[in-house]
Amino acid sequence: MKIDKFRLLVILTIGLLILNLGTLSFLFLQKKGGHSRPHNGHHKKKPETVIIKHLQFDDNQQKEYKALVQVHRKGIKILEEERKGLKDELFRSLNSTDSLLEEQHISKLAEIQREIETLHLKHLKAIKALCTADQMNEFEKLSKHLGRIFHPHPKGRRQNLH
Image 1 (cartoon, rainbow, N blue to C red):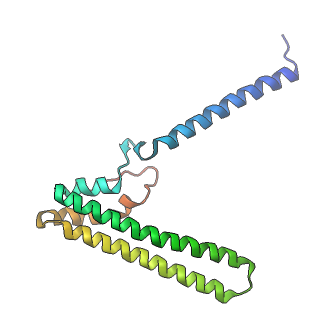
Image 2 (image 1 turned 30 degrees about the vertical axis):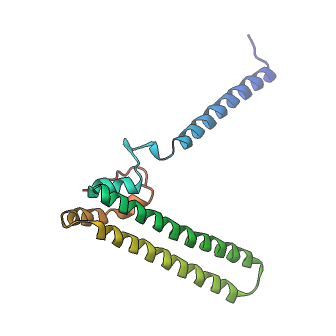
Image 3 (image 1 turned 90 degrees about the vertical axis):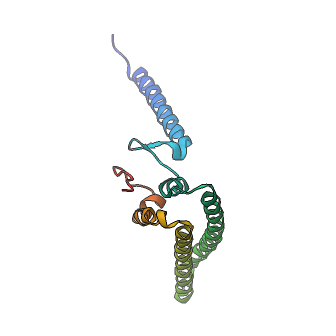
């Protein structure tokens, strides 16, 4: 039994369509899972959860910590919005021949980034201030891993706090 070229083309097209739909469904379902998806056999945890658990904050410390997080997020959001606006201005300046304007935008962006990092550091110091003397040792251990807690993990690496 011979399959003519047209039928073969129809069969291949249907097969590719099914494969594409399956791939898109898989990707959509993966994104829908968000932070709760397993990562190398472990579940990704929010930094707040990791910090509370690792430092073994009591109920009062948790309340204070969550209040600190809210204030910190508001401050970061303001700075991020300002940075976004400046980046937009910088990109619009691509059509300008004014290199001084570009430098001013870059300097302002660097200043905002410095403010962001300063705000992060103040936030971490405030978390440290919440710790009791007994929790300080755990805070010191935790501080060595803050980069991995607050930033995405490269594939193939596990988050290990000890």
